[in-house]
Amino acid sequence: MALTFGGLLAAYLVGAIPVGLLVARVVGGTDIRRQGSGNIGATNVLRTLGPGAGVITLVGDVVKGYGAVRLAQAAGGAPEWAALGAVLAIVGNCWSVFLGFHGGKGVATGFGAFLALAPLATAPAALVWVIVTATFRYVSLASIMACIGLPVGVALLRYPWPAVGAAVVAGVIIVYRHRANLVRLMNGTESRLGERASRA
Image 1 (cartoon, helix red, strand yellow):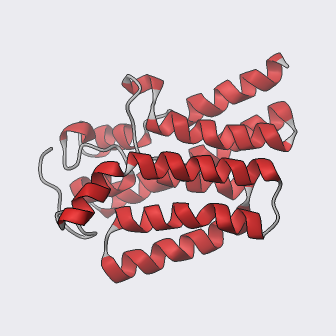
Image 2 (tube, helix red, strand yellow):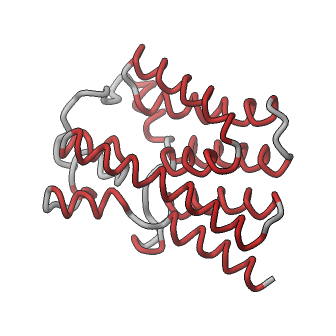
Image 3 (spheres, helix red, strand yellow):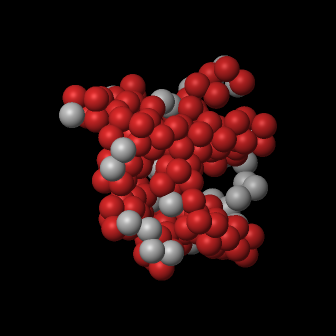
C-alpha cells in the first residue's frame, strides 16, 4: 500500500514539473509567468518565444503526463490507481507545489496521461482539437471541446469505468482552468493562434 501511495505521489510530482517555465528560462532567459498571458503552457511559450520553445514545452508536458500514469500503474497495478495517476498528473500541472500551487491548464499533460490510460480515445479528442483550432484559431476553445469529448470517447470505446471517471474529472478541471478564456471568448477578446504575445 505504501508503494501504491508513493506511486500516486510521484504522479503528482511529475505532473507538477513546470516544463514551460524551465524551457523559457533556458531558451529565452525569461520568466514566462511575466510574459504574454502569464501561463506556463505551450501556447504562451509559443507566442512569446516562438515555435521551437513551444514544441519543446508541448512535448515535455505530454511526456510527463504519460510518465506519471506509468509510474502510478507500476506502483499500484489496478485500473483505479492508473486513473488516479492521470488525474493527479493534471492536478500537479495545474496546481504545482513547485510554483506555490499555481501552474498551467493541464491540456498537454492530460493528453499525455490519457495516451497511457486510454490511448484510442485520444485520437478523436486530438482530431476535434485540430479541426477547431484550424477553423477558429482559438486554442482555448479547441482544448475545451476536446476535453468535453474525451469522456464520451473513453466510454464508447469501453475502457474501464475508472478511466471514464478520470476523463470526466480531467475535463472538469481543464474547463475550470479555462474559465478566463471562456469569458474572453464570449467578449470577443480571446487571442488567436499565431498572434504574438504582449507582456503580462
